Length: 396
Image (cartoon, rainbow, N blue to C red; front, side, top):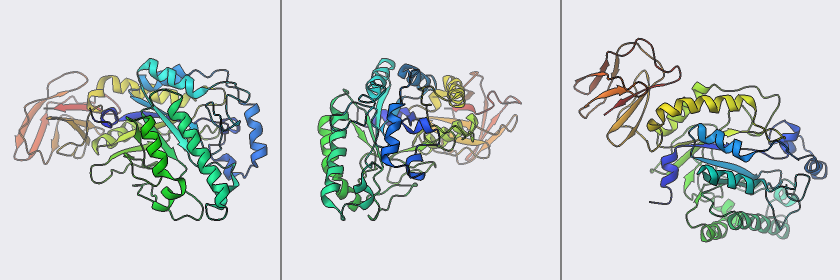
């Protein structure tokens, strides 16, 4: 099995953004946007003691939704670490909570047989050297880089096997940066500034099977478009990370929740273009997950229970979904995802190979098949869809 095969097979994961910012409940960028001084912001650590945190519930929600892996923010841009660290006192272990939440998360993932992903932000808003950049004060910049490298080493050493490392926060004020949210590319100056080559060599030495994303200025294994779906070129592995509302971290006033239908369609779009969907939740400061997130993940799970064969291990199909929806495929099987049910007949174009059979995935009911050149007609369909979100037809 090649190193990246499990991620290609999974196709669906859960992202978790959680930190001190959840207390303020105005999103994960609140410290920077509101220009909260580091000393003032640090006081939040004395209030962060989530009595209702249960990693097993978080991971179970992901698993029941059909996700195969989870990625947790071990440390976001605010600099607060959810793990024990010898190089920092600004951690959940050394402040009010007195708990290593990363350790509890990893234990829950292993119990559920879910792949373990760590998010780690290279930048830290508490360091003035970050805002000044590497050229203004090289000594202080070196301290920041060494700090980040030390923490990544701790994460790669203290928690057993880690399957996926999702870097973020690589951009630097005043440093040339060509990252786009469509297809993040190499940024040599960014990579040099963070000593990314040395950093990732250390990571791979400690975790030989790990998958690393492309947010260090180096391409590494997987591209990570954010808040949009855009397939990578040259058959590169890619994963679209997306929020359920507007913010990544918990925001009390953010009620712009997208629909379950939209999430399922986004998942199918990703898979149909050969990619993954990493769908985010932002837990509250007490450790509970907002009810709208729980509801939507549960609804995705009910759909996945019936239709997971059309997602896991699937990729791009040899023909499109026409006017009714999209297609995914595995081997000689194409799955037609019907988002707009037309009635008793569907016509697809560009079908070059002979179709042996077709049936509704949910009911196993056979569908009549007629081919005329490269046109495929699926006939004798139910008048109404079997699923309000996405009715899947398996075509062999």
